[in-house]
Every structure is written in structure tokens, then in C-alpha cells.
Image (cartoon, rainbow over all chains, first blue to last red; front, side, top):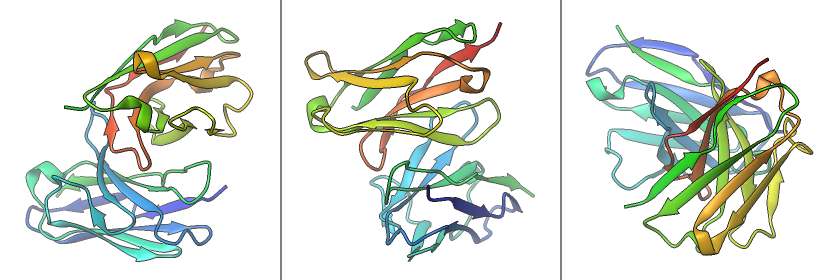
Length: 107
Length: 115
């Protein structure tokens, strides 16, 4: 199975900051990577797919990059509603594993 | 508007069985593959199973292989997860989610396995 390792696991930042979360795959997955945002008590929300394609309706301050084994999710200017937990997921081969999550908290 | 509504969760003893359902609306259900994803209390997301649009393609996580069965009824716009030989570690909120990657999710149904 493909393992995904996110870093950091916890991130403290302020409104207006630029933040980057990374996701490393245990083997090459081309660009078969998605990013999700989850707030407490809610279902996950798809932000980015195919590593860098923004899902419809997602603000442009979110962006994704990477290919192969190294990927990144960047939020260019944090807004209050962005404080949440973020997950990456590989869709290269089954089982479609998730990263362990990155909790983004207000500083 | 896409809607996915799960049901069937509850309290079950270890070794027991449970069947989850997910009713879809707002899109052509028969043209989408569907997933079950779970989340144990306070933990991260775990992909559980996928079924293709015509149910000829099915995959499971190793942790549920042989115990869980995914199925669908396109005439009823419904997705199912039959769970048997349940273990404590199957306790989680179970989400159904549309497509690859999952772009729409239900709100989840809680399954608690405990004696």
C-alpha cells in the first residue's frame, strides 16, 4: 500500500499568513493526489484534485503543486474560515490512502 | 443540488453485523463510482471501499476485506455497506462519497462497536 506522510501534523498561524502543508508519498503517484479540508463535525470538502486543479467554488487563495512523491498545499493569505484540518489522498492505486492530517490552528 | 444521506448506524456488539445505506439525489447516480470512507473518533480519514458505476469494479481496504461488502442499487439511487464480524476498531463515522476523487460527501452515520 502507498503511504502518505503529511507535515507538519500541527500548524499554528495567523490571519493573513501564507502557509504550506506538504504530503510525501512512499512511491511515485504521478499527479494522482487530492486535498481536503475538514472542520469539526463536518464532512470533508474537496479542495484540489490532480495535484493542482482547483475544485469548483474553492477560493483561489488555495493552490496545489507537486508530482511524483512530493506535493504541497498552499494557502496564500489565511482567512478565519480556513482554520481546519487538511488531508491529502492518493488516487493512484487501491487502497486510496489518506495522509494523517494537518491541523491548522489560530496563533 | 447533490445530496448524500447515510443511515443505518448504531450500537452493535463485537462480532455483530450492520448494514449502512446511502441515498443519493441531485445527480445521475448510475454514472458515478461511489466510496465509503470512515473516521474513528478523534482520528483521521480512512478509505474503506469503492464500487464502480455498474458494480463490476469493487475494491476494499485491507482492514475490512472479507468482512465488509459494498453494493449499489442504481434503480433506487442507493449505496450500501454490509458489515459483518464487527470489531471495536470499526467504531467510526461512516461517510459515503461520490466519485474519484470524492467530490461530494454525506454527513455520515456513526457506528459504535461495543459490548
